[in-house]
Length: 377
Image 1 (cartoon, rainbow, N blue to C red):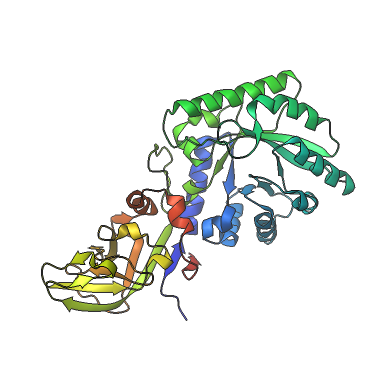
Image 2: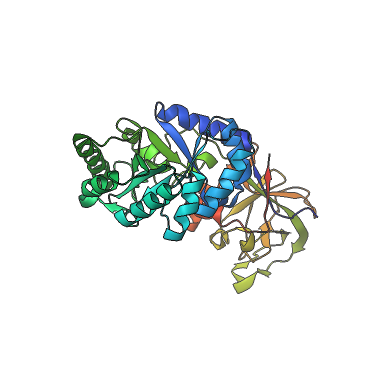
């Protein structure tokens, strides 16, 4: 059976976005972040499209994702040329399998590095690692004050190729944010001091999507890699600059379930939050908060029906949403509804929903329900 709610993924737009980002940051290289099943949209199609477009570096959050991505990339025929990196942490029992699989691992402390070293020696291989520095995120990694001492201790361990160093910014969505500027300066100083001690790195990166847009210096020496996730989808943090000329990749569609003429005085939905002040043509559409429509769209969001913007009226339910279609022409059960996406010269984006919800596009994309069919176009 065809699903009632579908999110279409425009792979050509995805590839165009990747190439625009790569051109924007050149000569730095782009690492595409496909964690959480490509933010819930289906990592296989994303990985194959990006690999064919020339991407060779991919980032994930944990080992299961790394192995799933490795299988997807193997099917492209480029066995051996792709690099998969875990960007967060690695747990002790996960290390041997990841070393054997050749996944690039984060060093977040000396004890983790020792375990990776032992696993590499046992496997008679060399494990590639990146030092993960905490320069202000406060979440994971080596504290800046300890960085040089940790590097010195880890560099002496056998079986390790300490090829990279990276960090992450909590405030890069704010253009000219002074905290981010201090982070960048601190990170660069650590890299310079490490060089004085004889430690150099093939890969140096601090920029994710926000920093690429708001802090262009993070794509210039000593930095030579940037990480991008949300910009691949054509979305941005709502507060930052939009330096990248990327385009929306996603279209969320559903269908009309019923159309009725309702009299003045009718109240709609749970809580009776909307009362019709005149006779109104109301369509009930087959999508609700279980499919990813935020409750924040209640009485103020829009969808496209019949080529027109139609206002959401009444509280969004789990499975259905009521919409004013008085100006949408002839609307019938089964007609297509665009919840977000382009409609002629107009569009509704995940960023628009995020603004109404007071969040960011990651939250919107990651909360599309599990009954929403993902279709790669």
